[in-house]
Figure 1: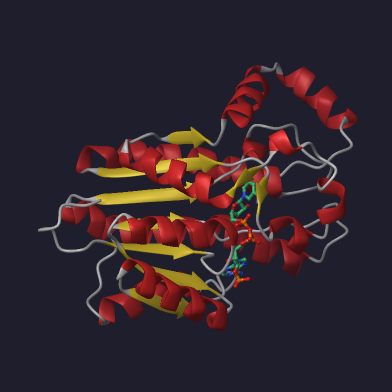
Figure 2: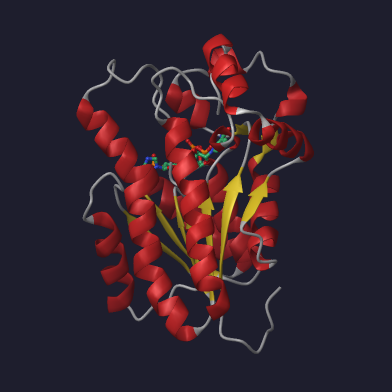
Length: 267
Ligand SMILES: NC(=O)c1ccc[n+]([C@@H]2O[C@H](COP(=O)([O-])OP(=O)(O)OC[C@H]3O[C@@H](n4cnc5c(N)ncnc54)[C@H](OP(=O)(O)O)[C@@H]3O)[C@@H](O)[C@H]2O)c1
């Protein structure tokens, strides 16, 4: 918990209407933060905000926003500035994956995907890290994935998008850490959420062994601890840590060979 004589700090979590984002909202509230919940499904966010207020006594604000809209990050920033709410912790969690190859999907679908997973994420970091640096306090968690270490899937942009998050987060952590603004790229593996339903692959992944899976509460708790400890990268769970480290150490040619051979999509 935070010191009781400190003013409550505020955490903004994107993708807070489900899965890992909802778990992060509860984790930050449990740790004494007020929370700002962002996603498209406003009704779901309102329900979660009411539960958080009742359970933890935290303030919970809701901002409905589609992060595929390039104007959303500035709208979110301006909305909070107009209410005089400072953001001390930012969790860029909103995300999804598109099933299928590159040319199978319309360009607009890829554009939206890159906007949500990369451009809005970087824009929100830019907007909120500036006042964090000025106040000499900030915590930023960007959700990458074990997929950032994995061989690529044929024509799928998910691995590339998550590699950007992994590298980008380490770069800004180097710049901001001297100002007490810590940034962590959090890399979950298979986690029980709505992610695989949205992607339309629930049946295929349900055949994967149980030891590969984690729950979203554990992922969020580990992520919270990692950023507070100033870890630039944290891979969730021992299995994912082992797999990612082996994959990261593979020679490029072996990785390319595996990419050609693999039949199961990565997460
Ligand atoms: N689950 C896994 O196995 C796994 C593994 C590694 C990494 N991850 C990453 O973890 C993060 C969270 O995913 P999850 O597993 O918790 O999935 P989830 O249960 O499907 O939740 C995704 C969240 O993102 C929000 N979102 C999606 N598109 C959005 C948009 N255009 N604008 C605003 N919000 C949007 C959704 O809210 P609305 O629909 O209400 O907008 C929802 O709250 C993602 O970045 C994902 O890539 C997941």
